[in-house]
Image (cartoon, rainbow, N blue to C red; front, side):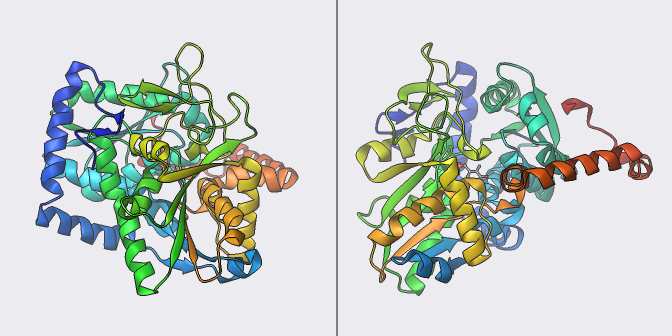
Length: 428
Ligand SMILES: *Cc1c(COP(=O)(O)O)cnc(C)c1O
């Protein structure tokens, strides 16, 4: 838990006066929910039947043999409903909002995965959902926009600033400040003003708790846990039961992008480029330009390019409890192929960064010990990123043939027949 919203000098509640009340109200409701047996039981059943928990802890036997060191295990969060860990948080917050009597959910999304998870959770709980998304991201992430709309969510195009994630967060905060009587804002990672970092960790800690039980059951001697770190929600949830202990080693993989230069990566902890700053209502380590504005970042994985990091991870990084390593796009792609071929498991590009860390470490750790990788998501969603890399010519032909098919108009028939297939004006 934070100390009054702070993790060391990071965290806090640096918000405009209008947001104090909704944040205080949320904090009260969250604190009550964590000791409310009925709430926790409802959450447990939804986690079991809707998300599909517990997710397996899988022994990667072939990978272990190939790497020749520690036993490699994979926590299969990618098997959670909607394909990643994000649903743990989205569902938890949406359920909390419902018990608070809120009738409308808003969320921000960058690559679309958090929007998708929130849209699905809201459909399940019968709550209307609006997702703020930068106009640029909407254009880049049409498959996820389509999925959100399929779940009945309204995607709202954000046209301010760089028209990406940071602007979507600002817009969602503004909307929340204006309508918090009816509305809850589901933030997508373990960041933002208190109580969000504590709350997101709480809902994601189901990952770590399961890992703790699963490794005890198998009598594993766990030497290290590896997770990728965007904002930090999968990492902090996975690490949470182990933070107060000396072991295992906790390792966060950051986006090394295409290199160590400015704007070439999203390295906030393992390099020296990041500075202390206050952005989006909390204090942490951020990549900033000379004017103190958040800098452009780069990564092959859309989920790891956030310019900041959750305050608890930043604090645990400085104290040395969590080690951080930068993994380049190239190393992540290698890890992606390695686990696909060795195990028949396709990691999300984000998670492949964690896989790459395990590959680096395996040999340094003896064979009677285990390394556990959190596969935060599965890789189906990344086909638009991986195909142009691995099969550029075939992919271009495929896209061309899809365009031809569209132009021939064979699918128009359904668009006319189904009223719901008409376009959402908001995001075009
Ligand atoms: C969003 C996302 C991440 C990064 O978010 P965190 O809050 O750092 O966990 C990592 N992996 C996948 C699959 C994601 O969708």
